[in-house]
Structures are given as C-alpha cells and as structure tokens.
Length: 271
Ligand SMILES: [Zn+2]
Image (cartoon, rainbow, N blue to C red; front, top):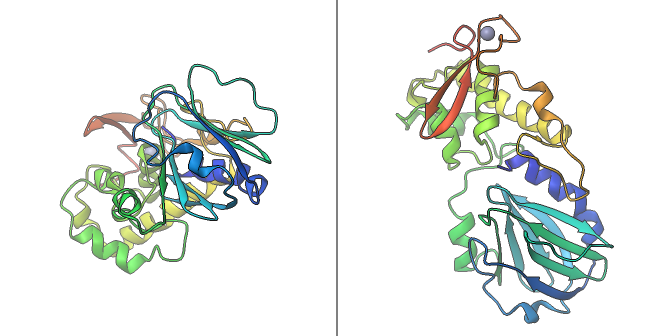
C-alpha cells in the first residue's frame, strides 16, 4: 500500500512538470472508491496551479477547484507526454497540454474526487480528520506526547490511526518503533517523555529517509516517472520475521495487531 513517502515521492516526480498545464480532456475508466463528483467535461479548460500533499492525498490545485487523489491499496500515478492507450487497470486520465496524468489502480481502492475548494464538505470529509504532517514544523513534541497520553491502545495502532500524526503506515510504524526501542504493543499512554522524544525523532527520520530514497518498492511502488524506490533494502524489522536483528542478532518477531503484521526485535524494543 502506498504510504506517505511514496505519495510524496509521486508528488515530487510530476508536480513541477504539470504546473501551468491546461486540462484538455478527462477520461474515466471503471468506478473507483468514490465518484469524481463533477461532470468530467466541466474540468476542460482549467489550469493546474500546483500539486500539494496532505497525508496520503495529493491535491491538484486548479484555477477553480481542486482534485483530491488517493492511491488506495494499489494505485500509482504516471505523468507523461506520450502515454500509451489506457489499459485494463487505467481508470483515470487527466489529459493536459503538458502531458497525461494517469491513475493505474488494479484494486480500485484509490479515487479522484473533485471539490470546489478545500473547505467544501466533500473535502472536509476526507481531509478534516487528518493529524499533523510529520515532516513539517507543526509536528510538535509536546503536543505529540500529550496526545499519546490520552490513548490506552497499543502505540503501533495509535500511530496507524493517523489522527495524531498522519502518514505513519504499517511499514514506517514498525521501523520507527524499532529505532525508538519501543515495543509495538506498549500502551501509548505509558510512553514516557524521553521515549516519546525518541519516537518523535524516529518518525521524522524514517519518513524523511524513505522520501529521500524514493519510497519503498515493497508493494511494487514506482513514482510518476516509473522509477522504483529502494527503501526496503534498509528495513530494520519490516518483513524480516526470523531474520537476525541488524543491531543485536536476535531473530525478528512478527505478530498481528488489528489484522496488520507488526515486526519487532524482542531484545532491542522494550515494554
Ligand atoms: Zn535487536
């Protein structure tokens, strides 16, 4: 599943190239998770002002309105001047004067939703509950620790919920908890200030490094240029069940938390 770094890498791979483009046509394939929410023809002639990211949503700002794009479980975006004919899993094309932005999404949990503005009810429904951005200044340690203190659930699940801080998905939650030396099953409320500080730093570190590396290819991720990411080469615990911890040699363990696989080192990560 594309997580925050993959979405950010995708954004960076086409944002500069699409700015200033005019929409020439919109092609819709099979239904996605949510409908577009406007007549596709009404987008023709609008200009692309920029591409931002909020959590795992890309916001394609038009001179009037905004397209919210989500990659779902299996989506990927490509932006190219010479795009081949749409294939089976290509479900959305934004044809512009500078190239075609195409969503390929075999499982169709992704979506493209048009909103008149970011404050429109449909936008607020999707973006309103998101926590702070982990890579920006607003991700404040005091607020983070205070929010953790209010949650009794295991820290891994609190991170995944995304309402305290966005974008810490399954891979990066496991990796950040390893770096911070915290067992994923520990109640968030029991995490001390020094440990919260380590976790806060680890979240920023692991996400920033993943973005720098071009995201993860664990789910066949590629950016809008079609280039693969390399983060998985560096994973400390994720998907390494039974393999020796890279720090202490203890076999990495895998447990299930709320249907999701969690990986940790029983020696390096304390209760
Ligand atoms: Zn270890």
